[in-house]
Image (cartoon, rainbow, N blue to C red; front, side, top):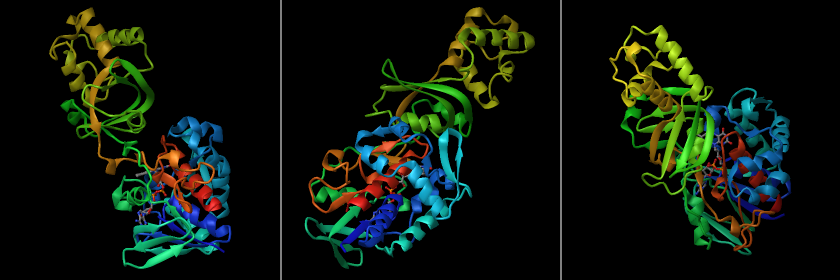
Length: 406
Ligand SMILES: Cc1cc2nc3c(=O)[nH]c(=O)nc-3n(C[C@H](O)[C@H](O)[C@H](O)COP(=O)(O)OP(=O)(O)OC[C@H]3O[C@@H](n4cnc5c(N)ncnc54)[C@H](O)[C@@H]3O)c2cc1C
């Protein structure tokens, strides 16, 4: 029976520890918080979108960094295996829009309790409230030093300390430093699935407004690099919402003027059809001023911004609006433009992009190629994906593979 230390009690660490225990190893799971899975508790707005029920081949199109590296992990422990395990541990699941899988109870705490039960079933010793401050060595015999200066040795160590986002949950990047000290390269760390800061100050007038069924295009200089359809929300100095979070994953090295976002407020209508619609509305409101003619077409909050950006004076009588002015308005509604200034900070990101260089990890085992006996699992590795349950599946699959291989 070998001794295994797992650092970090998030989804990756819990899965790794329980799996290693199931293989007959003597396992210690070290978590710096008093509770396991503090970030897991927040996932899916407290409902935990634990995976996606798409065929596993479809996962790779939703993984935005190093998807090939994850082949073995995802096929070793697939979404179906995860759902079966969670159900076996007493948590019924359901599938929602876009294949997103949630616990039937809508409670992430049920998933955490199931994983705790799994740890117990596999005799994992859990030490809570103790951070590992140092990974003293690895190769043949590994050692860790805790905050209380206690030293523990083991045959193998799995680092599952997560990324840098939402640091209050315990994910403060400790694993990067531990791995770096042992010679590993850490690729550039940046926020991903994160709201964006824009240059235009008028977004502040729209704070709290959510636009549904809009289409966005992200331009890098003149080229479209990303397109999406869905929901966008205006926040202080910027934008958020599902389409923006996904778009953020595709931006690299943001500098002024490099990226802009074009919002189509009426994607269901071609320019021609939108013009016809405007003509009908203008007929209805022909005796009103322009400022009072758009309420059938747009959310009330955005009307002053559109009026301000159009070439039509706000108090012009609608029946005086020219064809040229109307066509200019069509273009504006089909392409409201914002210039992206930066990401919101990494602490506000859903995930951290970058991490332990995958070139230095064996994809078939999750073991370091540089340090024998050292394994990695979860977000600490340089892999990430879109929303939809893919990131948690990555954590569980890499955790399983590390646990079964160590
Ligand atoms: C608000 C929010 C919502 C999200 N919703 C979803 C969702 O619905 N679906 C989805 O797929 N993904 C979601 N994610 C992403 C998902 O939560 C992460 O991908 C996942 O938690 C990564 O798991 P992990 O185990 O690698 O790391 P973490 O969950 O970050 O766990 C790492 C653990 O290691 C511990 N630790 C760190 N350093 C030390 C140390 N030195 N000593 C001891 N312990 C240490 C930490 O305290 C922490 O408990 C969401 C993320 C956020 C922030």
